[in-house]
Length: 450
Picture 1 (tube, rainbow, N blue to C red):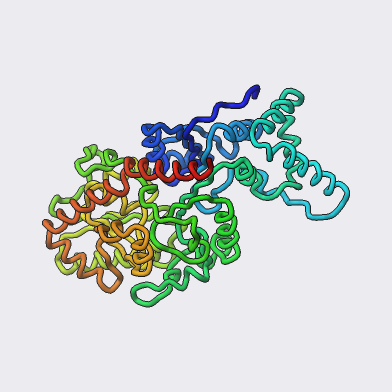
Picture 2 (picture 1 turned 45 degrees about the horizontal axis):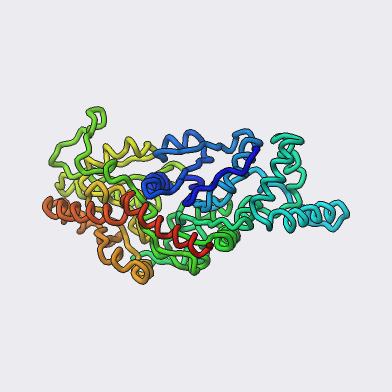
């Protein structure tokens, strides 16, 4: 690196994917004058399964010197770094597993003194001096040599040093929340009740797995996340623990879809046609990573264990209905099956919805799930229009049977709810809406910075 890279006037780097949402938002931001790039550190398999595009691939097994060199260049290329997913605010993953030195030996104090000098004399003077130092080191020992030096000092640097460096440089950090473990303890979340007065966590496969979900793990992540994020995007009103913070906002637009990709009149290739009669009412149900998220007779947080026997019961009563179930298909393909469905059915105990029903609404389908009253009220405080206009059909284990019977027998009703669903999704979850909203949020953050 022989010179300081030119920083774009408006620039954002999306680090890691939030499904395809950040990809579509980034495309719209480019139309609005932003340098907006999506960088993926996930595997090629994950990119093919869930994502719709990536500008730069920096896989975790990519040559480390190359990743470090890219990271240093990004410091001046981008003003905003937008991350997503629990534990996902990180760039150079390798070094967070290195044990940190905490003794008071001469060697430790010497290394700490060197790092303190670099911080006070170079880093605090921001980018010009940092790049001059980096360029000098590269000329003397090369990128691989610099990587060896960095590895040597790693035990004396703080955890997530890469993110702390972004903050020191005055970069803005934005984050997209992705679920129940994101900043909320297991104890707190388990207090949410279902409509039939059970804990929402009772059927979760991961509840007893402390490696995945625990108070200590969830809260440690939430504390770091809130300490570094300037703005956080959430949807669903789960405002407890670290989600109850001034930096956390209800931003439905960040969970964006391409309204043309998921359009109601999508052409379905012959090899994806369902072998079912047009008259049969098809209920679409999906569970990602079904094998690892299921336990005991189809018990999933998605309510599979409720829908399977219920549909069998309806069939025994003479209703012409089928449950079409899918798991682990690339969503570029699964949309063909979604387009043939009449109703989307999802979680009946959790309290909100996710990507499945956003896709269903964009396809113009009536969608069913449980909407937790407390979360709806939390949303209504910040986005009252969204809460009031939401066309999701609210159901729980006690009411789902009658609701499905009504939908099965009333095609005109399904069509009208589907029309409203499409209008709602285009207004709140289209890529155009996402680009416009994030342009406003990012511009406001940069204005405060200036």
